[in-house]
Length: 241
Length: 98
Image (cartoon, rainbow over all chains, first blue to last red; front, side, top):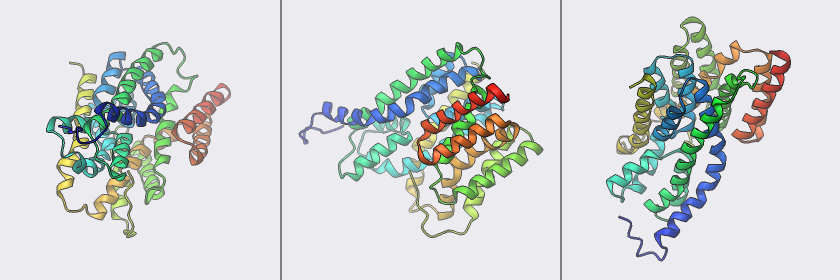
């Protein structure tokens, strides 16, 4: 339970402290929620399914990967595995932030981990860095507006997607590769980024030609990860959230 | 239940496991082996690359131009600006090259 009586701030202002920090996250992610909804419908999802995926997974990149592979008729278990792989980075956030949430009740911790997205981790971590405790109210203030907007805009995007007449002229079929490429570029400051990308690209292309469609994802990804793990360690491996 | 619903629910469980799993599992270890950490660090870029490279191979000049411009914009701007730039080039180029 949050014992906010000790501090002079009310829990209401704690909530708004968090909500204020959610605004840039909403501005940045809102358009992608719309895009996700529209593309999900284009790949064979219903409006409800697009909404449900946003509500249940709440992880933009993995949802995009999911609908892309769904559109390619990839086997369901492989879609789930790919969602798992894209979201695997959360393991690091969870390990890092866990001890700062450990003073909450178990139920509150269980809720907190459900909404531990990239920006949510960054917000919580910077609160810790500023030397203050992360309260449940503050954490929810930062997460709740993003969650509500994410699921609502996904549904809106899905409705809009139903109305798009000529998807090819609008480039809908190639928007996801551009989006994924943008995410790849976003990781470019990480150690070994270029060789990892080159290894995955080469392996996935070969696998795509030789083995066939669904497998190029797992084979290509594995090639990049193994490459990174087997390279000589530089000694200053920095993990970036 | 439909296959789509199963995919969504299983994907949600898998995602939740990654979000709670680090706290439940990884935090019990004193430290992560540097090679494991290097491998984990590479996971997102490695997975996402496989969704771009073969798609580019099968694409044409319009898509290549879009990716090129988007990549250049990504060097300076954020995800949204690179995405919009790439999408604009794609739509424009397809009017002539498709």
